[in-house]
Length: 221
View 1 (tube, rainbow, N blue to C red):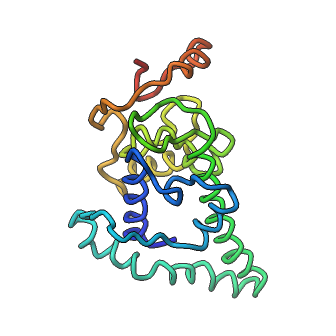
View 2: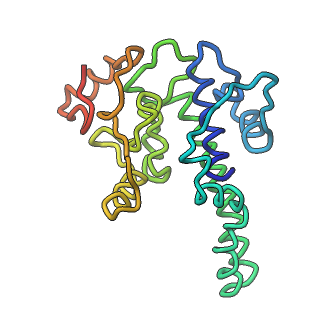
């Protein structure tokens, strides 16, 4: 989809748009599933008056991030060459081409449903788009499908913040943190309070009353 800086720009644009009172269908996954698939997987949105995002110097001037940004397409060679040497063209096709199509398509599919249907723990008042948690995709999406949590705490590295929300991406990130490769991790408890963030009382009635603990990090209000 892009390198780390390109992904940062795409994500910031989408998050900014979804927090407005009105949002374009492209940025909110607001069209039919077939139309949205065509838009997201084949098209790009060009804004006449795009918002300005200022990326921190520690990112935009990082030699590591700029190298990753310039070479993100070439990075497939790290996998492609060994696969071709060992298994020839079939291994190359399945190990690179099919894998990329499935992973990018799967990322879009989770995003489509996570912005349209599913369970909500939180409601962001005034936002045109609400995130939803897609429980069935919790494991295979590396935690991405706990999207209602992400809309509530967009700066949190942990997405599966309740005790019954497995988040493999967080487990991996936390392991890297423990060995010193990742620093400055932010969790919900580290983020400022948001007056527009409302707790869903229906979620409390259906889950907390059955004995589920509210959250490892956040307490119910």
